[in-house]
Length: 58
Image (cartoon, rainbow, N blue to C red; front, top):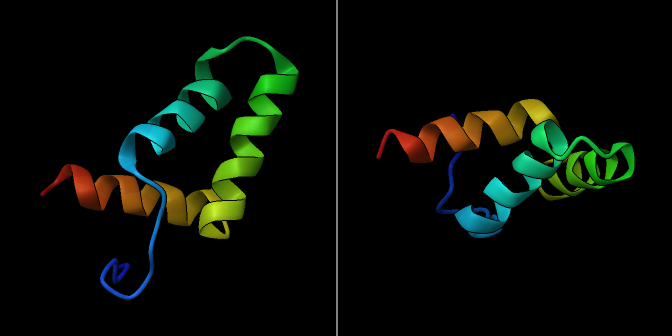
């Protein structure tokens, strides 16, 4: 589990925007940008997903 007290992640609305870009935009360039932003912020898509699940359960 991620320790969000030690690491500062981007605000949830920004993360949600990147997820939307990656999944629903329909534009390959925008999809790549969303994916790259998530990877840059979290290190991997798996960690981004874990963080989203963690904060959704709060």
